[in-house]
Length: 590
Image (cartoon, rainbow, N blue to C red; front, top):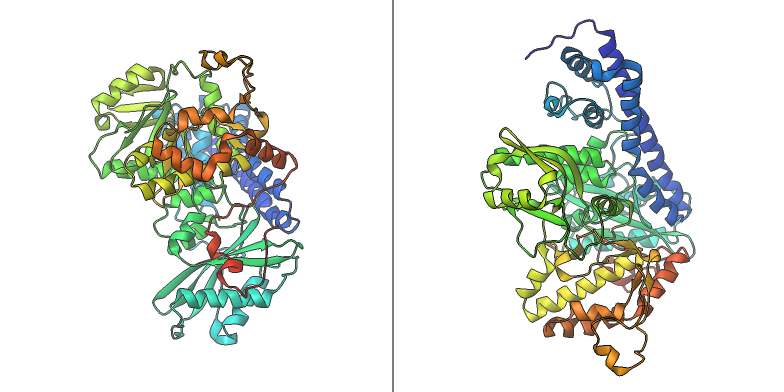
């Protein structure tokens, strides 16, 4: 179907209103990102955490605001098909020289789908496919800066790179930091510098990446046909001065920085597609959808993820099946063997032990986006009214959907329309991993499990249901929590010791002899449902016996209430310069 762009003042005015709505959103987004530099310099860690949490809502606020304008000013519901198609064409014209066209297209989709019926969700009315190229968009300031070590020497170049970020705090020992950087790079290269080729340069992304207590400088060295990605971690010492904590050189470790199990970055970007393109050049195995999400652009991440999913369905033939493992009491989980993600639908009726409703579950999953996941909670993508091919659903899965979640989907023609669901990266359930593990692997997994619980607690998250099946093991062996229907803030809980029984025989009774409130937690009870297997019990008690006592939990609560923000490192402790080199400047964490 062809639509020609004729004279349509209403269509043009609607398109202008939508561009204005997006531009307002991105202006606020950038202002928030710019302030990250100030909060980093001021060591206002709680303010930075609050900023990341509050920013999650910015996009929906502007979408709702723009949709209301279209209703109030243009009676958008009454517009005919031709007008809506012309709105899109006018909108495309307005994006020709835009610096964030891909984000603006997604914003258009978000606003339009609030107004139009789902039958209009195709490329005639929304951006099912991108219309504007994001290649070679001009940017000021530039996406990255280039430095040439042949001109002034490697050490002077590294120092200039650091100083060009113009932090207002002084470095404790910048010459010592530069020396540690050079030594770490030389060690990574096997103790020998390669010959500098004529094109030798160091490219550095213009804006720093702020998260938790760290600012990251991210770039790559180019020498001949070789490229060497790197990330520098800049932190505060106890005296409030800056220091370089480590140099990360392995691409897979840089990829871990962008793991969806961590908080989103604060980065000031005029052309976000340029940042994503640069990051893809150094961590090519990281999907663009995840990079956009980790840069705080979650809606763009969702758009690109769904386009990738549609492409995968087009180029594969296996079916969606019920996910292996112990079925959950709240979620029906399915997957596709060829696709590394799971799909989670809220059941219509929960298990008898779950005292909650659908709204509570949705609120808990939203909570995950508002907290620092500290590398221990899987992020989720939330979708509504998504159409997937009926032919790709295994009959057993369709039967389970009909039995457990009939209100959550419809069959329309040759599509299954799922009204609401979550998507997470697939992991090996920890209970399955433990069953298949050697003694050494089990020991490592149990230690990781306890560490995950500790770090979540310190970050003000109580998992609630700590069964092994609610945790997964990543490809890097890290244990991550992924079942959120019972999570709570640590500070909302009451951790108690079980009082002595008045009479010995009461300990054998089926009911407890002590009163309990809805927020009461008795850590001594954890052993009953967690440590039934002897091998697991032995490993757990060796490393995490204190988790079975109220004191650990009460101490964590006290620290949170004092306003202390804990350090969480997305890289191994042994890579920190204070541990890597005995003579490196001593720089303990603040």
